[in-house]
Structures are given as C-alpha cells and as structure tokens.
Image (cartoon, rainbow, N blue to C red; front, top):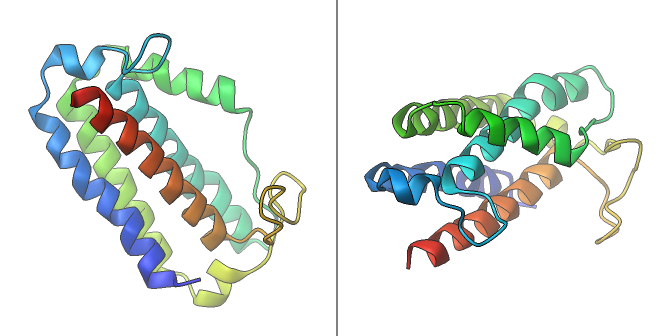
Length: 159
C-alpha cells in the first residue's frame, strides 16, 4: 500500500471537479440516468463522506477505536436534500473542494502507523470482498475507487 500515492490520487479527484464549474444548471441538476442522482447530488454525497471521515472516522481512530459508518441510504438522502436545497453549484463545489483539501491535510499529517493501523469498520475486522484488514488507508483507497466510479458516471453522462 503506497501511502503518498493513495493520498495524491484522492486529491486528484478534487482537482478534476474544477472542470464541473463550467456545467450548465441543467447539466448540474439533471439525473445522470433515469432513477440516478444528479451531478449536484453526487458532489454533495462525496462531500458528506469526506465530512464523516474528518468528523467521525479519523477522531475515532486517533482514540484507538474502530471506524463507524452510518446507514448509507439515509446518509446519502441527507446529501441529496442538501444538493437540492438551493445551494449554488459554485458554493457546493467550493465546499467539496475545501473539505476534501482539509481531509488531505489531515491525512498527510498522520503518521504512517496511524494510516496503516488495523481497525474495525462497523465491528468487522476484514473487508468481506477482499479479506484485507481494515485500516484508514484501506478506506481511503476504497473511497478513491468510489470517486472514480462517480467520475466515470459523470463523464459518461456529459459525453
């Protein structure tokens, strides 16, 4: 597991979102596919997960406790509500960028042993898909893949 490469990749997504400032309001708020979220909702969703890492997961790991993640559906629903609350595209993109860079700073300030420390995620020691022990770095790698999934969805919609 390459720590600096993983954190750098996480930061690159933030830089890519600058391209979204040029979108029309219609592109920003239209579902990317029928029954799917809009780009605004996706960015709000990613911002909420970054905030969860900053405010819940990292403090928990620093205290020597496991990571806790909320019910995805209700958590994501709150993000979608925020995206549709009248917040402007510029404000939401700025908030996302600001929170992501704050998270990057925190990750860069942590010792490698804190990033690699094996901890539980909702009480589970290993990822059920890969069998890999959970650590903050592993979760950041998962979130990087999650970012990439949404980036591909957005690019496909905009094509």
